Length: 159
Image 1 (cartoon, rainbow, N blue to C red):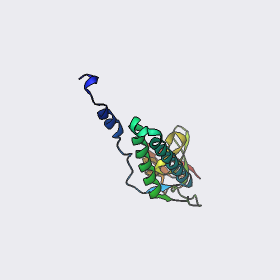
Image 2: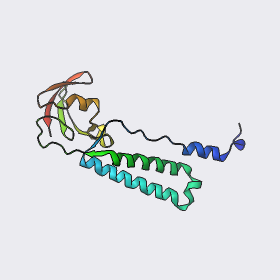
Image 3: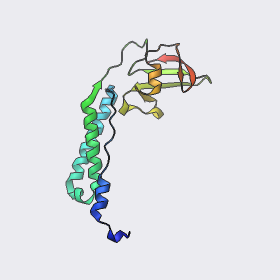
Image 4: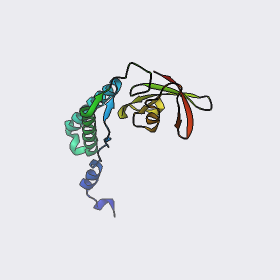
């Protein structure tokens, strides 16, 4: 079908029909840093929403408005459900908010912080508390051996 026979409003409706960002079913545990990130993202979402409403952008760019609305809903829900968890001061065993270092069979030592979903970034050294890595090491102590991705690793430090 020729583009000449399509309705512009149909294209706008499709562009504005963005699905909601999925919200995990498990509790939204956050560190102080994670809570600060949620606050920052919520402020940015509010600003994007206000900007999309101003200057007649609603009629000219429905995608921007849809994206701003979706992000505002997501970050508002994440802020409302956030449960601040302070790391235990004792690092005898691994728990939420701690960093764990483990040694692989090839001698590499890797360190990851166990944090909330919105704060997790494995490339930056943090994983969600519901990730397989975190679940494998939670409650363990220095010297314990756990299996990660089919390989045994030894926990060498907890901070």
